[in-house]
Length: 427
Image 1 (cartoon, helix red, strand yellow):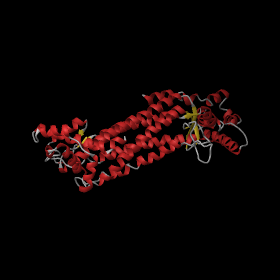
Image 2 (image 1 turned 180 degrees about the vertical axis):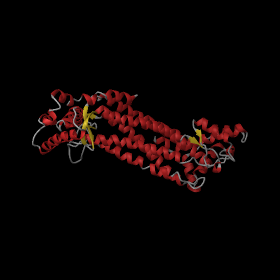
Image 3 (image 1 turned 30 degrees about the vertical axis):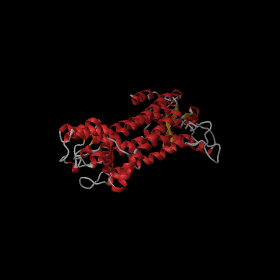
Image 4 (image 1 turned 180 degrees about the horizontal axis):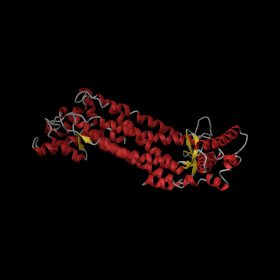
């Protein structure tokens, strides 16, 4: 990813754009064929020399063309004929963005593969599902991971669309009228680069395309953070249902030898902030003066490498975290049972409504018994379970016998549909 944004690669793309354009001009008869042959055979540049020239003239494209001319010789006077700087810069920008998008899509595939593998491994591993951080009802760790898999499946589809969004080029000349650049040149360059022609370039590619690209990258970052925060919560000492891999020689704290911290997930949370920080500047780049200005240029030189290198790094690190994640099924079971069966409250309420009690009354009956369990366990007075309180409540036992309660207090209802959900997610 870093190599895409190095000057050597940028100028190599610039040279290819200029060469393809000149070859089409030669075919159209507007320049000598010898000029196109000379550029293809002798075309080159020197990055140090380009930087030296730019330091004097303060124009990067002219500095580049001067360096190329020093390699090509007399025929160089035909290079860039009828073109403007944005024709080269924006077309090359499209090439770099599509190269970067391909890497990001491959990275997302790595994350998806790791999530699918671990999801199937733990499809039957029961754990408590939480809402507001409070125990809700049972789920499985495999289903939890499958939800994140589905998010990255959507992320991949969005990145493919975002790549298509920015895969347009322009070689339309000053203010985009094609007055000095035949439209056939643009079509030829686009075909050779595997890209498309911009509908209306106004001399620059409209920046709403790039805003879409970086907004998509921002959503990917949020999906990275979402699972990272989940891992951080699960690794808390009071929870400890899963944790990042901790190697034999790894150290957690300079002061406390016992520490095992979720440093990778915390790092990923931070990286997500860096990636999303590119979204607002990209949106603000859309509004340019008239047919063009360069207020977007300095922004893109910063956000382009920063956001994409961070995204590449973060996705690879996340795939590694998931692949090596330590999972503790017994701890999950312990945590699930620590509230004494309160997770079966909804099933009890529904059974009571089926027996003829109104929903409102059924809710109050179950809540009354559930609160007793909460209060006793919170005060450390006992280990009363929800089932025990229900069995001592005549309003419940008048409607539900032992076999009914056995059916209610079973995990089967929470796991029976998970295979179908996973099949749908991985389809």
